[in-house]
Each structure stands twice: as structure tokens, then as C-alpha cells.
Amino acid sequence: MMALMNKLIKARVYRSAKREFLVKCLETGEFLTSCAMGNLLKHEENIVVGDYVEIEATDGSQGTHIVSVAPRANEIYRMIIREGKKKVIASNCDLLVILSSCSRPEFKRGIVDRYLARAHQWGIKTAIVFNKMDEYDASLFSDGLQFECDRLKNLGVETFEISALDPNYKLQFLPRGIEELKSALKGRTAILVGQSGVGKSKTISALCGGNVELKTHAVSKVGKGSHTTTWAEIVDWGDFTMIDSPGVRSFSLDDIPQDQLLSFFPDIEELATCCKFSNCKHEDNSKGCAFWADRDLDSYETRLIHSRLESFKRINEEVCSIPQWQKK
Image 1 (cartoon, rainbow, N blue to C red):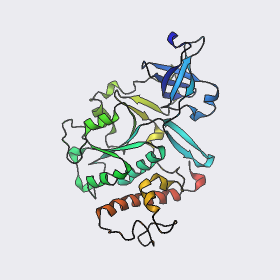
Image 2: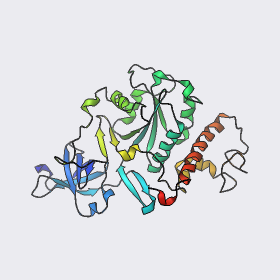
Image 3: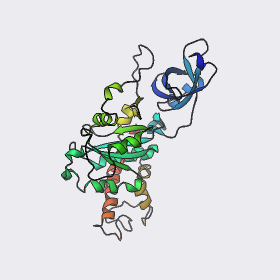
Image 4: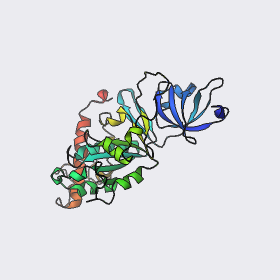
């Protein structure tokens, strides 16, 4: 601790608990408990998990305090419409990883599109991992696995196929598997999301060489004997880290303003600008609609576009059914 006196140290916030923060020094890897003072605590979201900060030793004590927060590359947040502000949960995430099952539970395209909308709102790159490929059930994919990958190519979404339980699984459909996924995650901070039962824990175990027990909860709670419930944290898995938070795992879109949802579907928004009327409903009988007019409705390209349009319309109907004053 003496080495910190009169010296600013760059660190990253791994966990927060009221006014105390567990930070990891970037140079040494040492974990320290730091406090924040003054203007940094005027608003709760001034310091969040994932922030890069500068710390220094507190005079006459064994603790440190945070003196500055670096600009964020992105923020994970929810809008609080009634209060006209956003609630920041975490920051500086490199990748949102959507884990889907190719057997049971059944693959659900709509859930994937919900995750993609939220990732676009946050400005975070996205990858989709198809797990349980050793049990691949083609009947659960109405248009096939390749179709699900092709419909997202324009969004720059990376796709991988794996079997978390079979380290010797051979690729069948996609060019990238577990080794390529490890490379994509190396040195990055990710969020792993997916339905219950898709194999999130088993996938993390496969990525860590099966040694999850040594890595889970490797970061101790902030403050000795603290009973404060931590609502967000970074978990270190060795070559990569993950943001874990109930606020991240919950992907309801009920807080999104009705007039902003289209912007979270950039491929749909781009084509919608070509419609004859600005208030187009994008129905098959809508005059001059770019999604229907002069199109071969049986073509592969049109089917890809319509699959995304259907997801947008379903989510838009749900968002519009919630009064603005009820939005969280």
C-alpha cells in the first residue's frame, strides 16, 4: 500500500457496494477496496462496475479512494421514462454473447432479436453461439440453422457452433467453433445471455477447460463482513471476464420509448426509409411499402427481411401496449 502514496494508479471497478468499490489494478492485478468522495458520489451511476478509474492512497489510512473516472466506451442501462433518466448498470463491455440451444429448450428467434435490439441500444457488438450441436434437431428450426445466421449478417453478428459437453465435437454447419469462440473472448469483457437450460454454466466450463470451480467467486465481497447485496460485478474467468448482474440478465424491453424502437433494428430502419409514406405500417397491403411492393415474396432475401420485420412488429406491439407513465 505504501507504493500507492502520492501516486495515481489505473484500475477497473469489479464490484460495488454503496460507497465502496472493489477495484483491480491494471498493472499488478492486485485487488483493492476503494472509496469515492465528493462529486463522484453525487449520482449513483457516476461510478459503476466496468468503469476504468484512477485511485490513490488515503492519507493516514490503509485504504484508497477513487479520484477520477475515464470516459466510457459504452453503458449498459435501462431507461426510467417516468423520471426522464437512464439507470446505468455497468460499462465498457466488449461483447454480448447470445447462447441458444439446438435441441432443448427450443430455439426462439424472437428472443434472439430482443437481445440484439438491446445490444444495439447499448452500442455493444454481438455474437450468437449455437450450443448442444451434438443433439441438433433440424425440426426445431423452421428455416434451418444457416437461415438464422444469414438473417443477421448485415448486423455484423458473429456466429459459432459448439457442444459444451463434447470437447471432441466436429463442426457441421459453421466455420467457427469452441476454439474460435475462445479467441473471440480473449482479453475482452463479455455478457453471456440465453434462456434457462441452454447451457450457460457448461459453456463457461468448456471455455475455461472444465475448471470452473477455481474461478467462480474468485473476487471477494467489498468490505469485511459486509452484508450489502451486490447488484453487479465482473467475474474473472482467466483469459476473459464477464459482467454478471440481474439487471443484465433481465432483457425485457418494456422501458424502451415507443419512438426509439425502430432505431434498434437498423436493418429494418434503413429499408423503412424507402417506403412511400413516412407513417407506413409495413403490412402486405400497405401502399408503396418497401418491404412488400415489387418483391418476390418467395425469394430467400425477402424471407430474411420479413423474418426481421415480423420480430420488430411483435416487439413494437408489445412496447406500444405499455403506457409511457408505466415504463420503468
